Length: 300
Ligand code: ATR
Image (cartoon, rainbow, N blue to C red):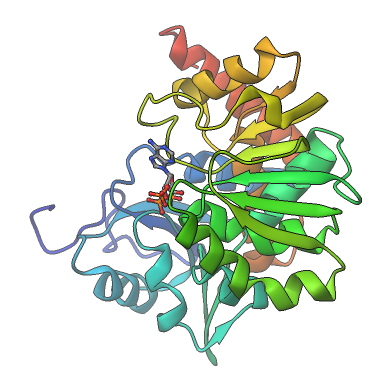
């Protein structure tokens, strides 16, 4: 836990500035790429903005958010482990945040705070626009029913694939997530069911929303789930995504990491904050170049 009166890691608030302030709040937060992404969007759109990292103590998330808003913050991106605490703080919650039970965006409007979840729409845009794979009519396997899986499911269903199977080690969690989305799936004409990791069938799109990659554990399903030419996407990026990407590439699948999803969820958050939709592709390219340079030990 940080010492001192404020957990903020960056510029002092004694600095008076009329430039609108935004931040990413999390714990840890030092690794966050959100400042890079949002500052790049702001430059692209010609908008003045200051974007900070705020380290929230684990037991003082609400107080940290309230302080940032009271000090003039206009909005915040919320990262782990606080996304589940966000809806309770907001006066208004988007339908996708309600379905996910979690939010990653808070906007501090004068008439009350609004919460949204842009993770799922970020994933859908990266699949459809980034990877160029249409979801409509496809068979989708979503691995994982934790926070990441929950954030993805509503927007995935909204894109009207033929079928979505949520497979999870603890099948009860997959069943609960599917039950929460049952009416949503019916409304969109999507067959939705839960399974354990020994799942039957083959899929056109396999999304890994488990934390196995971060743990350095193997891919948690059999290789036979991939249809020929399937898209296999891990929500992680950098070294953490490598085991899954190698698993996908070994069978000739179209392998994709989570960097595009990260940039796309930020683009939607930027739109919520500023009312302008930035172009994600050039920022994704710049971010990937920076990560590659870091991996080679070269300053970007
Ligand atoms: P996140 O917010 O990243 O989704 P989480 O809510 O802790 O994190 O969820 C982690 C997900 O990874 C869960 O789906 C979890 O499965 P369980 O619900 O059965 O715990 C999955 N997971 C973690 N370790 C795993 C492993 N070794 N094998 C398979 N699934 C694993």
